[in-house]
Image 1 (cartoon, rainbow, N blue to C red):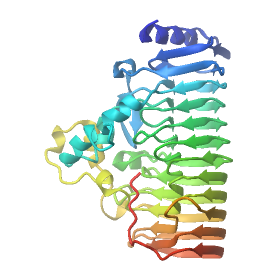
Image 2: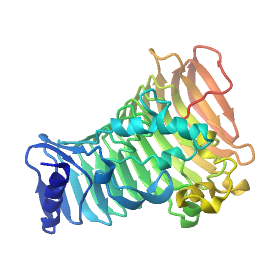
Image 3: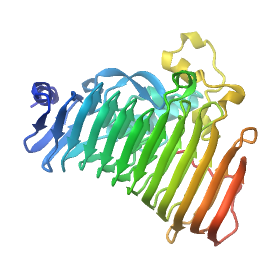
Length: 417
């Protein structure tokens, strides 16, 4: 069957599913475009089922959504639940976004050409991620009471799984393997509440698990905070760890991160924002983390990746596409400084044996609006260098045992992802 026929077949099963019913697909591989679930249903992906993403953008309808903090029109995901309640996706099957074609579209085979090189040459690095449309694997948008369990999701074109404007969502025992593509986050929890991520394995080429709340004046005005999120008993492989930000304009609070294992991640616990986001991050509880061969066990930066975070000089804003205008409409002046407070980090162990750098603490706040109320307690770290701490007040170290194998090599450590 053609991609369109296969998509229509599966969508027909979903549309015909009765309230409280279940759709179970016959064994096989199904290459499809976007499908859309509905309320009060279960989609079962048994172990002999694989949904494979079309490599034609036309097979992903344009929808109103949010991408990297900006509300805009963008292709739907491969599997979508929008304005739904009481939805489950489960089973031992697989969702494969076949994302390589979209990665090549963004940065080419050498990871520094294609659209990325073109936009950088024009001084538009800040916008290429938004203009290079790439499908996600899974989107939960404006949903309540959704469970994703047990299946594998891999190789999405962009973020793998996005939970947006939703409440009471559980992601458990998922396996997410998201290849070597640009901005291929594993799980993004975006302006959502009451979310639990438990027992998942995530490896990717950007943030393994990320918490966000929108970017710029629009998100600040919405004030749709991400709160009451728990991430526990997860195994994080390659990637950039568990991250808060960089889109924090709506605020992030009441986050619990506990009992997680990190193996060869670039970062363990991470905060990233910039001087035009505004918003706040508060009441964060991090406990019982084990890190093996992690470059930066703790990396907290409030002036992250300037080439991406700031638009630079622009002319004739009114003639620009709407999403460009939204990016430019950042939070200016002192209000743009993200407030970070009340972080409690305890019972963390970290060591390394096969990576050249492990930097214990890299904390870089704003001098005008320092991060405050940060406690490190019961840490046992073996690292190559101590690192850097600036822009912090009310910082407490309680029973921190750190073995440092060398002097700090550099004042600045570049880490853009």
